[in-house]
Amino acid sequence: MRAPDGSEHWLHGEFKQVSPHDFLSLTWIWEGGDMAGHEMLVSISFTAVGDATEIKLVHSNLPGEGAVAAHNEGWTSSFECCDDALAGSA
Image (tube, rainbow, N blue to C red; front, side, top):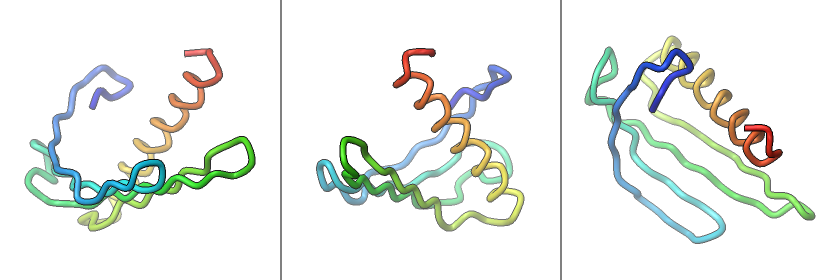
């Protein structure tokens, strides 16, 4: 993952469940920093809503409130970048 300041943050994991067009779940394990080695789970569901797709993301097993805030900021930024790319302004 590359942060807005250009720093790189490495992680790994494995897919736990894949249901094409509907659902993904995967482990999320940072390789460095305060959360290195702590296994979290990311679950993403995709639901058709008219001509659009609703995406629901749940990031669970975060180790504390600081981690919740940092990951919320990261996921929000990621979805904003996705919106920009889909709108053609990236």
